[in-house]
Image 1 (tube, rainbow, N blue to C red):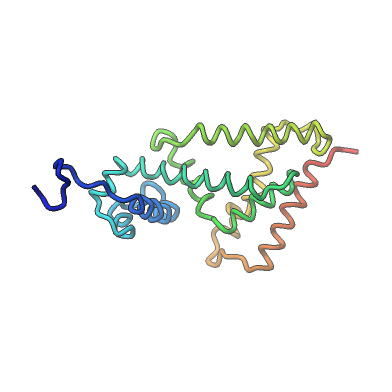
Image 2: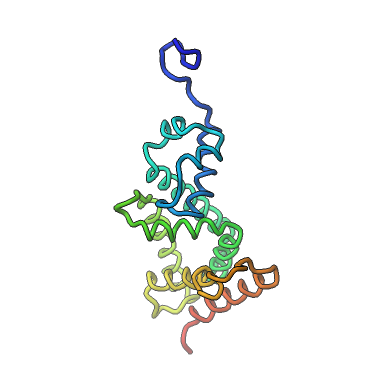
Length: 205
């Protein structure tokens, strides 16, 4: 029997920290290179794990990508809900703050969108639950008179996300060599996000 095997002849159970290292290394790799450009050997090396150990957890690269996407979406939802406040502008501000501190989360969403559902297995239940919760929040704010009732809640939800993420996709910001805004720019951009959403939801006089 190999010294690395258990008495049953099976490899000993790997401690959970190994899986976490793999996920963290994959998070960096996928955010930078997407599914097609990522390399399993680089992920395993950066996680101080063998490729064989990685494949014991995840059958293929697409499955690992989906696991990272799910982890990111859970962290995104939890963080935004924790700091969202009670109004839609406050929610937009919280989303912007999270986008600044965790840009890899939005990059993963972009990569997932480019790959499509045929290539990956996105956590649709998680996505749909978060979306439904946001729609319920908008509808409640509309009923309370805090949001213009003429908006389709689904459309408004998408517009708010677009405002929050606009600098990620605006060419002069996204494609220039120095893409990292300084602290003053971050503050000014956040204020613009909140102000834009405030104007968007204000009922017509």
